[in-house]
Image (cartoon, rainbow, N blue to C red; front, side, top):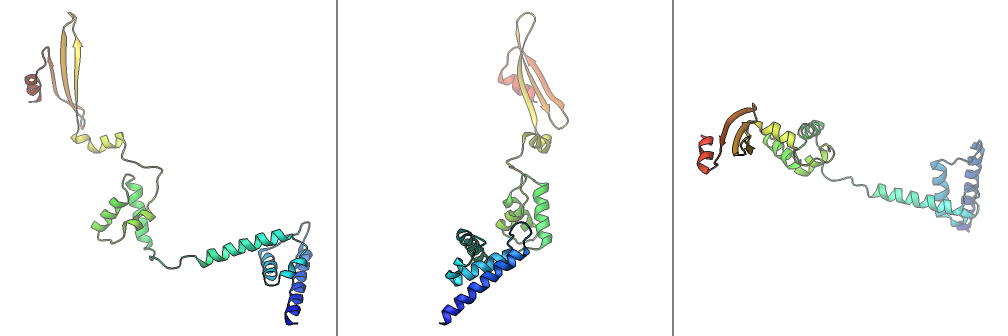
Length: 199
């Protein structure tokens, strides 16, 4: 008796909700999220109410129910615990270090922060780093710019004279100032000649 009365009240409530929706309409029936929630909730509690719902199809009600169910469990399983967030200043510092040093990875920035006395995990550093495309090792131009003072180029080449004789040339060039360190020419290249040109 009580259950039948509750079911009848639920049907009346569903019909009233539909009338409310229809009274709001201009050209097309527009349901708000609260309307959907009320209809789904009534059909879930009292399945007989689905016979009284006429402004939407039963499949639509089932789809809404699944959507609300997924949203509920997403909210329910949302992680509230875990590691606390780090201060905004430290987040900004990690982003700045990763922006200004694009070839550094999380281990390098983590090490630099430890040297500054900032105790933070490497995974946290990786989370707040700025990702600038696919950044591999430094390019050739960057390598030359960083190490130009310590690099020298050596070239060994052959020159044919007017009388078809072969001359062997050796040039050593310092990259830092683009200056010639040594130049040597010989017609008979031996280890002795190479040693003398290196002195």
